[in-house]
Image (tube, rainbow over all chains, first blue to last red; front, side, top):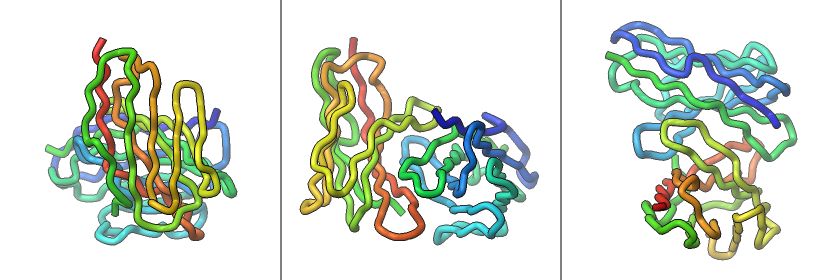
Length: 115
Length: 112
């Protein structure tokens, strides 16, 4: 089946630093990738949708200058949390979809802790 | 934003019993999907039901969809301790974006 990986699986950083999270589709080409954030004991909240080669579409309330998304190829999307603060601590999950498919394939998630 | 609600929020049952979770949503959909998430892990796709389908089975899973009531249910039969996880419904709404909107989730605990 389709596999999506994320790297790193967890990261701890100091407040004010930037953190980059990678999302890769390992055995398929992803037309669209999605980034979600999940706080403890809560559901997934969509942050942004990115299509290869174009700018990401951000959900209302998500700061595009703080959460930089780059979808440079059909197998890689990156999320950079700039100037991270403790309130950005969360579980970040990406997913990937092949054009025309109904199914999204989810990565294992990245746990970000900002001290 | 979240599409809708799931109930119950938490469910605790004995191994071997059936577990039923319900999901309600608000807008027209292409399909509805159910996912499982073990604590601190990613999501596992369980089953997808299209808007023109009313019931679907996969192993011990049975999903129903009532588009007139904008609701779905997930039944897990003969539950096992390994079924302990959070279960989320997600709707793929009509439209070109094909984004998934997740429900609030049900935490299922299956006691051995």
